[in-house]
Length: 131
Image: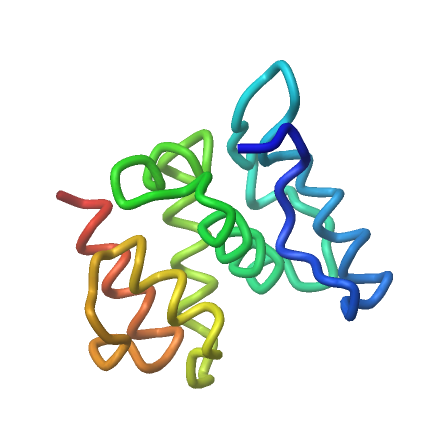
């Protein structure tokens, strides 16, 4: 893997979102390796849950997150997973395609049919994390 900061950004992303990703202060850092998100509940972002979802999708696409490492690699503390999943459970939307494919890979699902909504994804992730 190339030594670069891992972000899910493409040329089309807006500046506000780019700034939010940078505020996470995590990802792949040259000479350091992959660093997790610390203190999710203290993130000062316009949409912390969605920003983290996009960051996870980007890190998965780049190969930094895998089924074997994502539980320990995304958040520094398990309590951050709980808060994130509580927030995610409140999203009353269908999963977007990018998030669905990333989490299919992380959860080793062949299809996102088992978690078509963000609430369903939160339930699937809870089952995995509580194992």
